[in-house]
Image 1 (cartoon, helix red, strand yellow):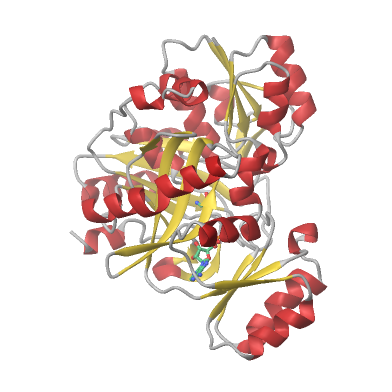
Image 2 (tube, rainbow, N blue to C red):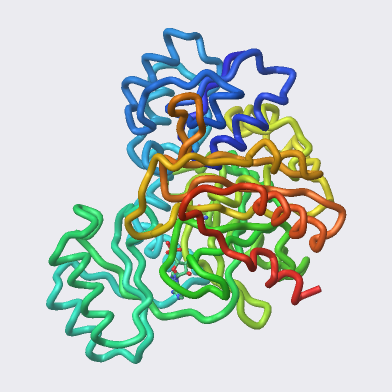
Length: 424
Ligand code: AMP
Ligand code: GLY
């Protein structure tokens, strides 16, 4: 079977790497891909959001299965379109993808079905939002309703910061239509974890726990990014908490979506805040996380194609996931200046040497080929991922590999995995 993966990040490199291992797969295409993906798949110069172009390509090539990586095409209805054209595709339809596409939709669903999350109010006028802020104790969290490439959430420590966040979203329209409405939300303290599961609309099959590192600098300082590193498992998700999250978050959410006429098929990702052994939902994503996909897919021993087909056909109850018990750690290497302005086109050296470190794979994110060399082409550039018998060894191997890679201005966090070590 021919497979098409939609997207171009580290997540998609890991997906292509994993899907290619399936004996069911004859050929992998990726649109648009990156320099690392090009070593494993035929890259197609179509944007991930070019839904019509992708559907036409899938038809012309006889693609047997399309796996959609990022949220933008999912919230734009790529799955609905492919299904209308009789194409097999993995991911939630547009209605279900609203869970990520609209924070107002997500918060209202959770409130209606009593799923634990922060208190909140929604505003569609700047002045009303600001008047409400006057009555609140700080900190608060201000969120643009729609997709904002991970930048639409501002944790405000002071009233002035909160008002500035509302103005950025609603007056300056920094995120365009995504800022038609804002959610103003109670600040939740605690430790974050990512809880991902496959869902076929009824059955929820959890992946191992993982933890992202959103802030750019060590010790969670500095502005938020798309994610600077991840590891799996996350010891903050104890077996008891796992049961609680399944019973109070994952299953009720999938049932709620079905009851609302939006059965959820795909990967469901809950971003959780954990305090005193209890989890509340910060966000839902309608896809694999990036970078979480890298450490998770390195631990997944099952044939991903088998799981994906069971989701599409609604028989996930017949599947059990085989998981490598060894921990994995992914360190993201980013361009200097990211998540602000950064330069592209820097020549990257040392990737081959890095991959010689035991248990290491280097997944590409923002990379391209120029004059026969791999160069930087985005903010997050590489996800250096290691698997080892212990977390300590996985961290050491990942950083040994990172140390072999360099380009002008490259930056990365030095503390990926440290939180997990403290809990051992
Ligand atoms: P979101 O895209 O909604 O997950 O928000 C991005 C990041 O903002 C989260 O990963 C948290 O670090 C932070 N965040 C979001 N909502 C809250 C909240 N209610 N309390 C504290 N931090 C939050
Ligand atoms: N790593 C966070 C995300 O994928 O949204």
